[in-house]
Length: 144
Image (cartoon, rainbow, N blue to C red; front, side, top):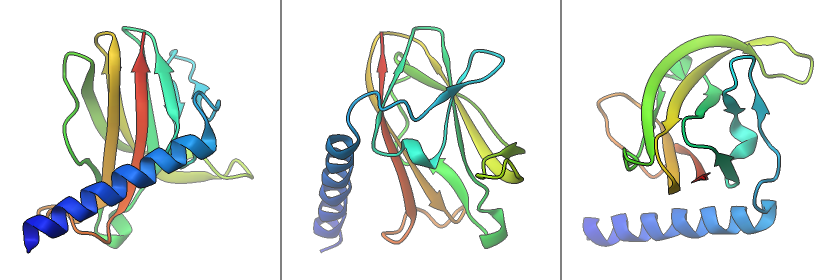
């Protein structure tokens, strides 16, 4: 029963991701470049395709969930030959419409080689594992 539920949940999230990609289109421009040349994305990039060059850094900035006892974690580690996790930290950033400073969790990845990778994150309780009600963030990363 639990295996069937896990498969159903996985299929649901894959279909959700594909629908979001179809709605947003590839390379929808939902990212910006930092002063250090990093490609910076946030919640708005969920369901999109993000293009990187080999050697470029992807910085995913998501709302800090520590107040609710949660942190953003990789659901499944990426292929390290394509996209390598590099850092995970908390900081403040201007994310709001009024450029107000908010607390964010930053997950940093380095494009190691050409290929495609689905980056899948979930807002989880540390040590509790993944549950169906956890917030998710998915994006396809294309490295050329």
